[in-house]
Image 1 (cartoon, one colour):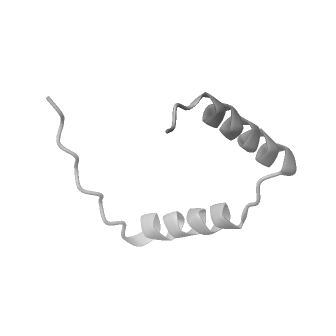
Image 2: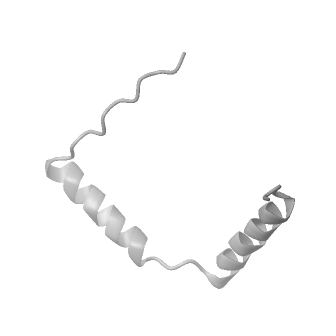
Length: 53
C-alpha cells in the first residue's frame, strides 16, 4: 500500500532566508565544461539503450 505524501512545509524566518540564498547561489553556479561533457555522454548512452518507438 502506498504511503500518503505530506504537504510541503511553508518556510518562515531564517529558514526562508537560508533557502532563498541557497537557491540563488545554486542558480548562479555554472557547471564546468568537463561536467557538462560527462552529463551529455551519460545522456547519449542512456538514449542509445532506450527502446523508444
